[in-house]
Amino acid sequence: MINAFRAEWVPLLRRRFLLGTLGAVFACAMLGTVLTFLSVGHTDFDGDPVTAAWLAEPGGMVQGAQAVSILLGVVALSVVAAALAGDHGHGMLRNQLVAQPHRARLLAGKLLALAVFVGLVVAVATLVSAALAFPLAPVKGVSSAAWHSWAGLAALGAGFVNLYIGSLGYAAVGALAAIVLRGPASAIAVGIAYALPVEMLVSRIYHPARAWLPIQLMQEIATGGAAFATPYADALLRGCLYAAAMLVIALVYFRRRDVTS
Image 1 (cartoon, rainbow, N blue to C red):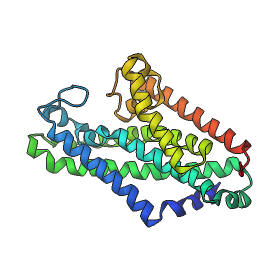
Image 2: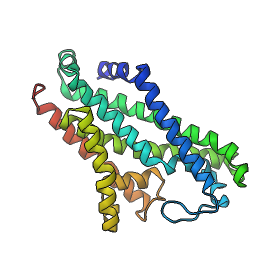
Image 3: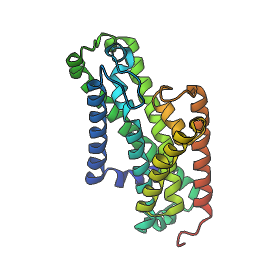
């Protein structure tokens, strides 16, 4: 498992892949933060008013990152799907199984490395959003006094944890799609198609579905319980159960399916 964990970092740290991923995350965080502060005095996508007093609260500096939590989740889904499906597509999986015949340990090591990488990606987005919030605050008359307090630091940490857990839910969808479909393009396409248009369409037509659909629950977790009416604790429990179920299915499929099929 440790060797699989270390080996997974080789492709993740390749310059083009790493810079491309971090560039996408930086752009998402910057876009979310700038648009959030420019929305002061107006309403957001759901029609809720965006006020200077709201952004001046301790958690206001991470609102930009939370505003684009869907995009961060898509990045996590794509990274995991590309990494896991790419091993099969490039023929690397056979070599990895020769070095580590125990499939469960191999997959666990790979998933652990990817989970840590997703955490680093979310940390970058959180820090970029918080850093941009300070120069943007005076422009829109937002006080940043509460951000310097212990409550502000606690809110920053809580915001990161929520975004990280939500992104891991997207990553679980990417892992399942990658192991079942075994093609990077198809895994990413199917994963994103389900996460975005399918669940959004269902939840728009039938609102109670938001409390049970996995990606909708991940959104509730990522925003700290501010996305929908589902209580945060319920969303966290259901989301974790969904993610665990997807990983168990992926593991069973990975262990039993022929590598050449």
